[in-house]
Image (cartoon, rainbow, N blue to C red; front, side, top):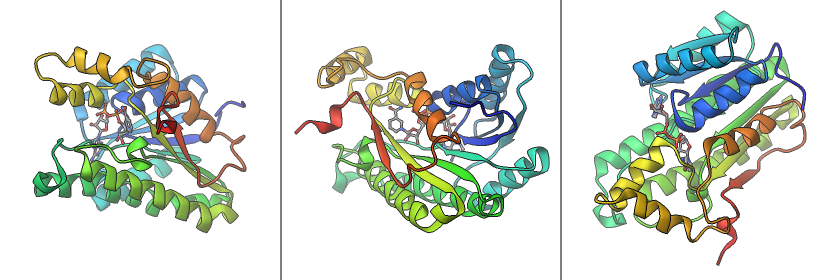
Length: 260
Ligand code: NAD
């Protein structure tokens, strides 16, 4: 795979977890990166960490809530002001919400999950695709989930929004492929990030580690994934070489979603 020299990639939810792992991978591959997150202190830490590991990386940080349209426009504009182009977009920020059966799901949390996971992902594409159209080049990786291709008990809002992300990915692929914009989604299984650690705390507050071990038993690999395993796939999907893969929702889950 060629490097990302002179390419600019925007990463949302970049302060930790999957976003941070991808930011490091892309920094290693010489990309300029815009890191977007609403957790300002974690964002500053992430920037420091990346610059320590990959000195000289072109980094712009923008504090933004992806569910706020004006703040999305702002991170897009700031990236253009700084780096002049947007070659890739890792549309990653998302939340899990709280776990509860469908009829008992808290409506306020439902709305928040919709705002971030669905509208946040949509706003990002809405304002970045026109830039990519002008360049006649772009790569977009939306973050769905295995919850975007299967149901997950007690996670109605999450599953609804991740199916929506898979759907929007297919539409963007159909509508903008002619501009050399390849739009794909990833569907990670359980990957060890702060979000998943929190989910295991909800499943078994007394012993989250036990919940994790039990969960891993169902996976063909008998383990959870790590963020770097996702970042490697994302780097390919954001690269020039990803030139004829478009509209796919790619599971990164050790094969677990194939089970009946
Ligand atoms: P995480 O909670 O560890 O990190 C998410 C980051 O996104 C945090 O830094 C958080 O501050 C930021 N963020 C959340 N909402 C935001 C908003 N409105 N605006 C800006 N920043 C925001 O989560 P993660 O596990 O790294 O998950 C990243 C993405 O991957 C999410 O979309 C998640 O649904 C998806 N995903 C994760 C897994 C997994 O196993 N970790 C599996 C499937 C899908």
